[in-house]
Amino acid sequence: MQNALQSSIEIRRIESFAEMDACVELQRAVWQIGDLELIPRRMFVVAKAIGGQIFGAWDGKTLAGYALAIPGVRQGKPYLHSHMLAVLPPYRNRGLGMQLKLVQRQDALERGIELMEWTFDPLQTKNAYFNIEKLGAIMRRYTPNFYGSSASPLHGSLPTDRLHAEWWLKSTRVDSVLAGKGLPEYAINGTIAVTHPPLSENDTLLAPPALTLESHLQIRHQFTTAFSNGLTVLRFQPANGGVSRYVLGTLDRNEPM
Image (tube, rainbow, N blue to C red; front, side, top):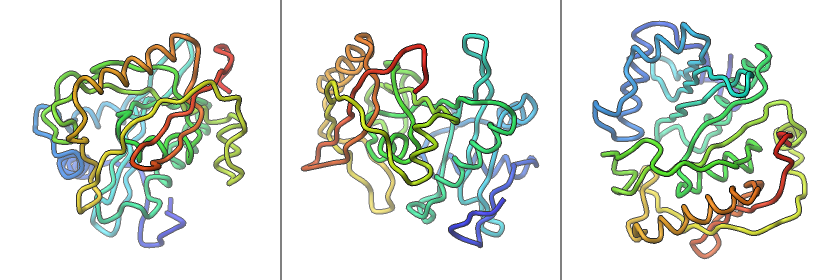
């Protein structure tokens, strides 16, 4: 599979132990995490064996990025949990993350799977914009401290709260945004504002040092309250004056879109 935006990049399935080891090392470079929090080679082996996805983006012999997903079942229906999408700093902002997600989507649809989910830090607004405005994912679940404590500097000692992205692969919403037509118009029921995190010199996301635990808990309260009231994150407004906004609306809980 070829990346249409850059002919030197080849996207293909991760197969060998050596390729899986390259994925493990890429984790260190992207998230700056220690051995305790690394996903080991054995997990990649298991994902490959049980119907998961491991796609790597190769620039010659260099692994520029990869996507890892594992299968799950909810309400009797299969879905894929996309646990990791990692791209090395020199290859970011070149459409590689999008290409990996599109390959994941194509593979899932070919297998009759219509839902892919993943979690992300609500404070990492660059990821939020990509997930919502570029891919068409929605959010209606929030888990406080999903991974427990983390030594990664990206978390800044804050709890690892996570939003759950739902990517309904065959929905009108997703088809529209991927076709370049944008997202549908929705009735708006409110917004949740977050401070835009800074970036390091190599475009690595950093936890905002000014964000206190108190303000973190306030954001948590806003999301959990909104979701308990039946609201859904449908749009995302990128930073304006250092503040970004998640846009809330109402969907039928029995329908993905």
